[in-house]
Length: 274
Image 1: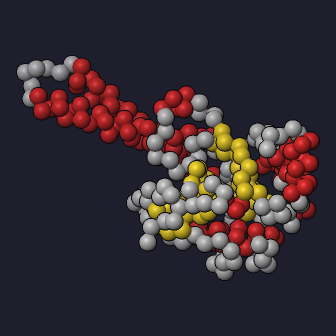
Image 2: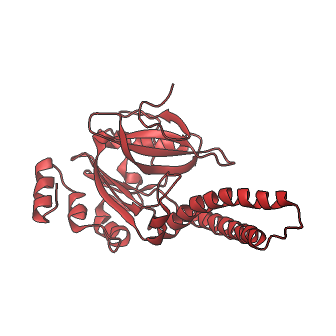
Image 3: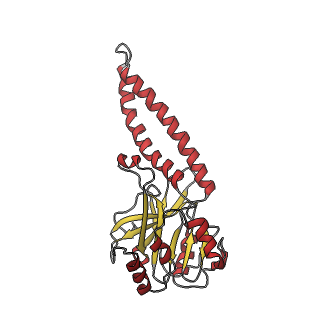
């Protein structure tokens, strides 16, 4: 049965249900949690370094191959087999596609900061992200955006408009990624997506999906005591994880909003456009 969210994401495995989920664990992804909001990191530093090295090596090899192909085309000797020329021309296309895929991978690993935390406020049902524009599951980017490697996405979303989907990333290790499909309110029409938990083995990432769902409905199975920073160390958490990372002041204040009215007052205070 195909995904109910349209358009369907390439590599789709299954849609993830919201609500109470007993398959739950924050593992080592929970950075901080209190009664208002929780913060989860989406990329471990070890994975970041590993994929950065892979991307650098792959880009280097692809550039060498591309240079040799261009050299062969430009300095082609008519006395040699013309099939070699045709092969070089047709090989340039997959090389170009490969580079277009590898550069975003390189950028997102270089410019992903402090685990790319995602914040869930369960009292206002808002979700906040501050991430590299390239921290996504897109396959194709406009090459012009490669000129802006520091480009970021800083947004507030409604939890009701976010829906989980499991995606196969077609790696040799059969890894699964969970993404949040951003839908138009009240519909299954997707307008964007957020990388929720990338590159995990099997259903490993679904444990965190289950934990977040339990947290958002105030279920006791979402135990905030397992966070890296204890609940009483919010100032230390913000100092080491949030400060200096480009989070807007109103958004940092909105993390702890307890009602929609309080959130509205914060936005009015900072003249945030609704």
